[in-house]
Image 1 (cartoon, rainbow, N blue to C red):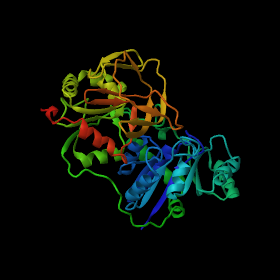
Image 2: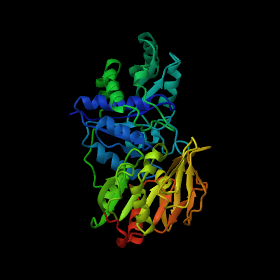
Image 3: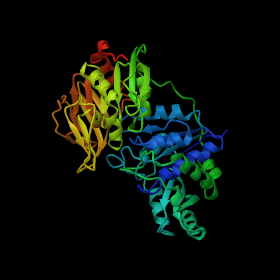
Image 4: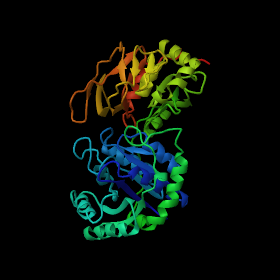
Amino acid sequence: MINSHFLISAPSSNSGKTTLTLGLLRTLKNRGLIVQPFKCGPDYIDTQHHTTASGNPGINLDTFMASEAHVRDIYQQYSENADVSVTEGVMGLFDGADKMQGSSAAIAELLDIPVILVINAKSMAYSAAPLLYGFKNFYKGINVVGAIFNFVSTTSHYRFLQEACEEVGIEALGYLPKNEVLAIPSRHLGLHISSETDYENIIEKLAEEIPKTINIDRLLEISARVTAKSKIINKKSPAEKKHKIAIARDEAFTFTYHQNIDVLSSFGELTFFSPIYDKELPETDFLYLPGGYPELFADALSQNETMRASIKSYCLLGGLTYAECGGLMYLGNAITTSGGANFPMAAVLDCTTSMENSKLALGYRTMQWNNLELKGHEFHYSRLVENALDTESVTAKNAKGIEVETQLYRKQNTFASYVHCYWGERVEFIEYLLKNCASKGFTQSR
């Protein structure tokens, strides 16, 4: 039985590691293998593409938002029954929240995963040798075993790159030629989700092309591992599933962490619904509105007046709600798009959000609230305008411990923030909300 694992990383972003990862996931799946994808860091978009390519849920590995013990546990839990575990790195190999903290290299060391470097060789030949040497020898805690080159023009070009690998003791595993047909459009940071892009077709084409120029068998050989039986994961769970939990999920609301959903399932019965297509909110004790791209679907969200009215009624009657980023935007009075168009939203929160004159807010966040520590990631271009929101008493800091202006807003039992919180390990946050803020009398009735 094949049992391999490897981490795909690169010297920098835009080297093509996500495209290569998606192609490898599908290539291995098409061989009949059980393939488990992972993603270093807080990205909630790449994991969706990983799920599409592999058929298994993409799992985040993040040592800022969670402890090292938690990351070890979930890696072992999800990888032990897979034939191949493929982890995609974040940014460059050594880029972390603070130096190497939380970087792909830190994850590779923690989990003892062999590293495969993806090198953008568009304007490079033998000069790849010192680059590879540096990444192989800079930090002895990781094991760089192979390299795959992207944007290679000819087979003779690749021969120069092979020679560079031989010089530094890294195995050249193959290359991908430049091919616009295989390109996946990007939005903001990394890839995005768009109904205009046929991801399935691109991923399948990648899977057809990859075996022609990349030695898959050798890749699996040099990344083979010995696995141990998993230990029992000490996961704090409620005694009984007694809540009805409604989660928004459609094109506008896609930014979720798999482990967050797993934790919510331990508290009760999950129902997924669409603020775009469904007529009203399903019966629920707790409404979760995750982030996404509501600005791209503002017209459709606005036109669904019965859903907007249903959610407004539920929230203003005291129903427990947690909204993050895109969910916060949806609960406001309106969304103004980058083109200046204004679309009415659910009108629960006393604010309007705008994509005009947008500016990126990005970074890890730690929030102290009611003796709870929440960790997550802030990533948005929208800004609050006409803001009359009430804030909770929260101290928010970035990865370097510097205070930031990030807030937790509250109106009755509706909580909202621009932070995408990770409660895969910190179930106390959900426990607190359900214990102290849920009101059974405000269950939405159909």
